[in-house]
Amino acid sequence: MLYIWMPETNGTWYWSTGENWLQSNSLEQLIQDLQTHNGKEAVVYFSSRHAQVFQQTMNKTHYKQLGQDGVKFLLEEFVTLPIDQMKVVHHFQNDQLNILGVAQSTIETWQYALSLLPVQIVAFLPDFLMLPEPEANQVIIANLYDHVLVRENAWSGDAVDDLGLYLEFLPADTQVRHSNLNFSQLDSLATVTNADQRTESAYQFQQLVRAKQHPFNVLPKAKNAETQWSGYWKAAAVVLVAVIFVQLAYDALRWAKLKKVADQTAVQAIDQYKSWFGENSRVTEQNIKSQFESQLRMSKLGDTAALSLLSRVGPILMQKQIVAQQVNYADSTLAMSLKAKSADDLQALTQQLNQQGFQAELGNVQADSIGAVGMVKIK
Image (cartoon, rainbow, N blue to C red; front, side):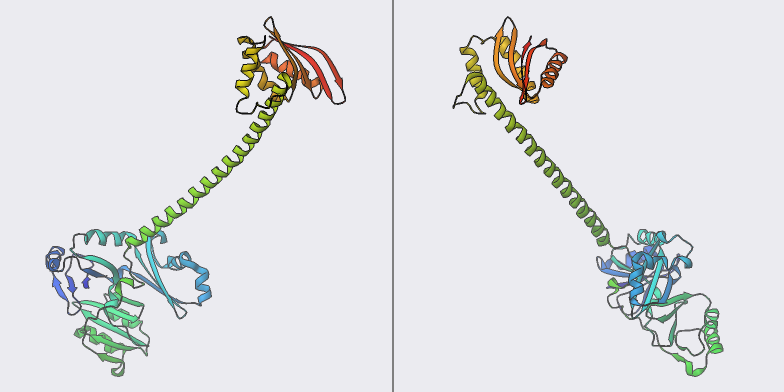
């Protein structure tokens, strides 16, 4: 694993294989220096000044009630950018919520600037994590290449310009472990602490365990986008399956309804055939058309015009559920003795036939309690 310490501006870059820091005076030189490590994974430390860190004590129930979005908005009053323009990460443990936010535009700039490096960047972390984790009631301060870093606990730290100003707000009983401070910085430290509070130690860079999985890693992960798209396609597939299921159910119901109508029509057609031409055991739904044509050819009604007229009138009779008891065709006129439920049905049939272009005339109608029989002539 490689470690890269990124300057705030066009300054010196530092990089390490896990031991001492090596210098590169520019990004171009860094690209050349890392050629021998082509393809390796790298952790990039950015200045903690780019990060806003917020800590709050809360119980687990409250944390769960907030949810991911609620946690983000806890940082809103401490930043100038809209919260949706910030990359916000957090860590919750032992009733302690630790939040870190960095501007999305800043992260995108880093990604663009480092895209030419011959390494695979796996994490963007604040540079206070380069210092060891302090003990309880202790602060670690280190001057690394004229950059002063402070680490207050496992999840909080900063990069400071004015150490004297920072020390003015230091709690009086805090233990301070310091490294590489210059005379001015040591003098500022001595002003606010006594000798028992100060401990000097040599700085040694320590590799961060599981840096790639660190909760403060603000590098947008490619797998997150894949998961998002995967979730989108899963949702789309569910919707598609639901639509297909509904369509199939609708088609099945429609098919069942149409089949029921078709079966009823077929039974009615067979009954009509038997009414006209007598009982015939050979007539079925499949051969009724050929049987009907055969009967017409064998009778005096075997006229093409009669067949045409019957084929047009027949569906209307079936629709109205009116049965023809007797049929006669002569002089281009189709005369039928029809049985309906009422005289009004026969009258309505005559009107419908006239509206559809036929010349229909209703003759004498005999009605009783079970229906009505009337003669209808159609041209």
